[in-house]
Image 1: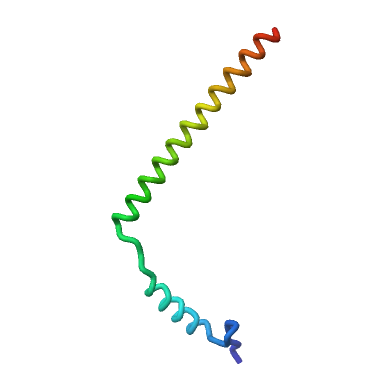
Image 2: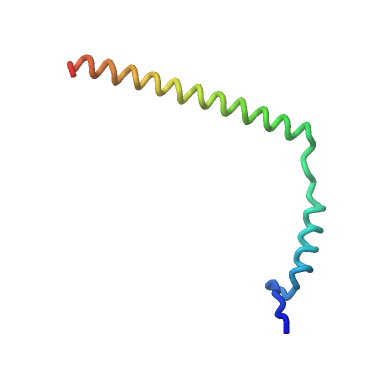
Length: 73
C-alpha cells in the first residue's frame, strides 16, 4: 500500500501544489519599468557605498602611515 504525504490541513501534495500555483497567479508582479528603476537605484547606491568605503580606507591608510612615520618605526 502506497503511503501519501499530507500537509497540516490534510491536503495531498498535488492539492498543495495546485493551491500554491493559484496563489502565485494572484501576485501582482512589477512592471519592467519598475524593475529597471529599482535596479538602477541599487547600482547607484552600491557605487556610492563603494566610494565611501574606499574613501575611508584611503583616509585611514594615510593616517596610520603618517602615525608610523611619526613614531619612527
